[in-house]
Length: 164
Image 1 (cartoon, one colour):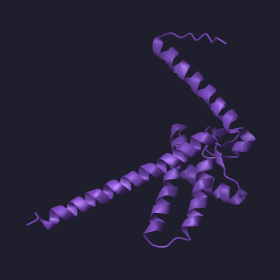
Image 2 (image 1 turned 90 degrees about the vertical axis):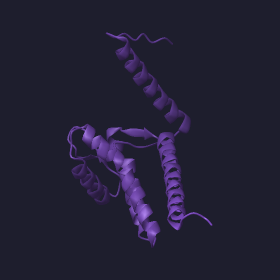
Image 3 (image 1 turned 90 degrees about the horizontal axis):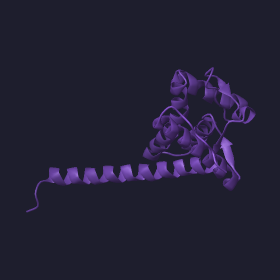
């Protein structure tokens, strides 16, 4: 199959090629995985709610890390809200309250900023992409914590002074 792409300049043609390639790759991933997850930020809202509930069972400093991870997941719905011209905090509050009320994760309607059921609207995300994002986030977090520990150890060594 051949697809003819035309545009006023090379940059536009390159952008169109990327968009077509990304769309085809998303369809390929969905077919290969046989799975999709609710889109429009609903997956992240649902994860946030579940992780915050889990954090209630954890004590000490670990609870702060779990809550920070849950809050970090809200970057996706906040970014969707900002990019569509809505207040991110209002959108997150609306989505979390509607999710609790309906007992199902709700996503953002980009036109109105209100909560919408992604399943009813046909908004889906690839399972493999979300899985890879969560895996990467935990690995990156571990590396940051390791770097922080190394830096603390180095500071402690500097404060102790030179070895005699």
